[in-house]
Length: 294
Image (cartoon, rainbow, N blue to C red):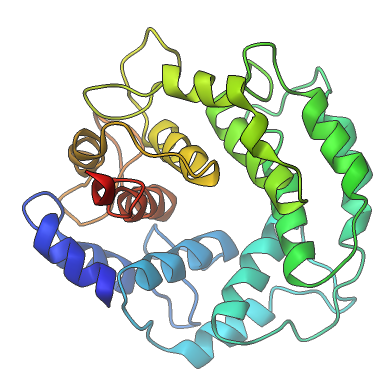
């Protein structure tokens, strides 16, 4: 509840917190799951983001027993999930309630060789924001569940996709997203990221004085995800946000009248992922790395 009170005090003229809460709660289905698009089936991703939004705001979710049952139903009879992402969304959500999947996880680490191979593949999945995201999720899950992974192999693979300017990932995708995921993986596996000075310098080049982070240094900030991944990358590096007030005002501009946040600064429908990114960014901006150090 503490952050909610802080939001009401510092951001009440910028962000409509009550509208956010209503936006999320109104999109819970009878099965306990959530979907950002009403009257469609519940899914793991939207349920994960909905629960995290409510958690950031200090709000207790409704129909918890149904939500837990819905999440557990997404695991197959053999213990597997449809993908690493579905496993991540389900298990992370269940852990919030102190719950575990119905069956022991089977074959989670088997995804790793293919994911590492895909890191340097010339073939790009146009729908994927980052080629590093699934490895980030897998490493995070394995750490939470005490599943051993080949840390040296993963660290080596991640460092091989580090670019000469300090960023990570292919220029055909979001390098800001890939840089955040790469830093998270390296830190999770015990690699000392404090020495990645070029990476920090690259992130700073995309930090816009008027608020937000840009896709390219010469561009104006347009998409919420660039700002989210920029802020979260600095948080991972334990670095201060240079323009916390400006970033706060910039993020607030993405809120729609229905309470949710959209991806583009110009137009767009609200969705749970963007709403989570906005609130997660605001949480950092209100922390000692943001307004707390001014």
